[in-house]
Length: 390
Image (cartoon, rainbow, N blue to C red; front, side):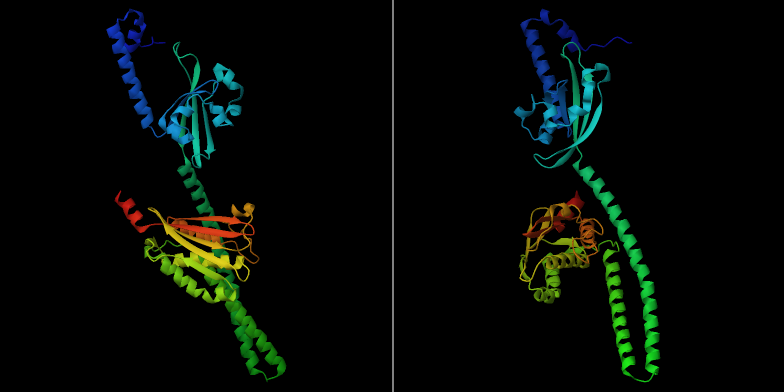
């Protein structure tokens, strides 16, 4: 094993008892300068860095670690890491007591303060020399919230696309027997016209007309369904959301009136422009308003409010319906999951897909017996331009 190399500073420290006051002052200044340099380097890192004793006491924390954990400069040092991350010490088990088996560990955990985030912890043991006073762990904390969300979103998108393609295939296959039914009903109708008129023939003709009408209705449902779920790249253009919303409300006005639903829309004309596919946004608004109507009894109220900040434009649809059970909220966007009798469970999934393809998001808050609020987030047009310039 090659001999350990010593720096000039080590050599000076070895002769510490022989230094005069001038050299001792220079040494202290040099140590302070080097400490300041290392502090600046560690504080420039985006990853949190901790030095932890074998008992879990935090001896050092850089600026990123304070930010990630949400504790100030005078609060983190001296804390016990096992208290901040409760599940960590049990997973280390007895290896903490055995120097030969001190583990290198990677763990992921969730923090809820100062904001929800997912953090990856990398923990590696190191052995100090005789000056250090014992075994320690170097702990690296990385914020992986965005990476984790991107991965989960990609998985969800792949699952959604698979379900939609399957549904589209089934719907397409249903078209073939419907076409056959249409042809045979037409043939029966022609033969009936050649027979002598009678009450029985008139009754059969009426039944055939009803069947033809139902076949046409089913064909229309399938056509609309296929149009709704086929993945389509949005044709983005500068869009005023208030105009699109006005068109959808006008189209649904009669149904709203028939159901006795009152609509109160607070949407200022100066709402920022967004880049959107007008037809796809219409479909989003139509689905959400339809859901709200079906969730309310006659006399219900639908409140639509909008606002904007520097990044996003927000539209909130709040109904006075029966609300959604908390255990159902997490499943709202799953394919074929529905809380409505006769529903297909694809409406909100399609809405979510459209919003994601627009670079936006959808959020749902609900309370049983009070109602539901669905909030849409659209990126502002000028925000997109700034992103492209960067």
